[in-house]
Image 1 (spheres, one colour):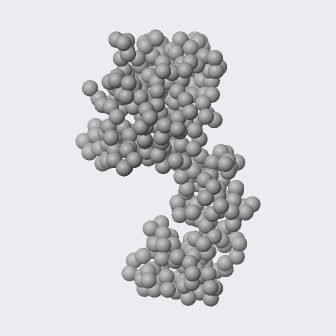
Image 2: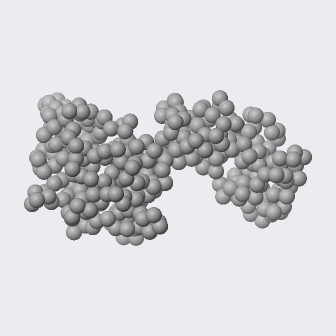
Length: 347
């Protein structure tokens, strides 16, 4: 739920209805909120907001409806400070999908926020930027999920493209992270080992390379390469990924990677990862073509899949079952919402 002026006003009246005592049930609580003096109080959709407060545990719905300390703290006066406090609570409880993408450090990229959402939040005025920055700080896991989702989307784009061209690619990173690359395929009898990097147009200049990936680039030589899939920034907040979201696909050879990474001196050795920023001239266009029927879930869903898969592998080794519908997902979603396998993920 976005903290629109109507939502915030409704939450205030619902909180005010609990200020001096509990309500016997949800219907009585909603009626009490509608009975507020202001005409607007009677016109608002209190029932939806009441259910929201219950679902987010901002009120306790046991034998009676009881307000928590947090919601009662914003129940006294419907002034601007109270409304901003309610807006902050809503943003913290249900952060919009674009929050971690739009907020970078101590600034907000308003151009990333959907126009309809920006208009709905316009009542907040000059306080909106700080409100979003504070909300983003309270929602740290989301950014990592989106980053994982972009990476997984890139892998699925490449897998789908190779399968569409008649190859039989293996998604080896689904088996183990130890391979040092994501996808293995054979083209004209030649093995290719592809380390896929996903990015947006604004982050395409650099990528992280793990020590293991670097070592595998040395070991496999020309068989190993980086394949970078660049997406439009819109993909970060879109509910599905289509061909027009892919800005381009390009490749970087293992030879270029080895030239970029200096050898370890006797006194120093990097272990986990390095940030590489190749010159544009080192990249070459890829022959990998985006499938015209590409349709993937959004980055949040794909990021959640990535987290669930890593957890599933750990749990499965301990005897637990993999995590439900996320287990084994490796493909694309059709317009009707059905999941379709794009390629096999194991031998």
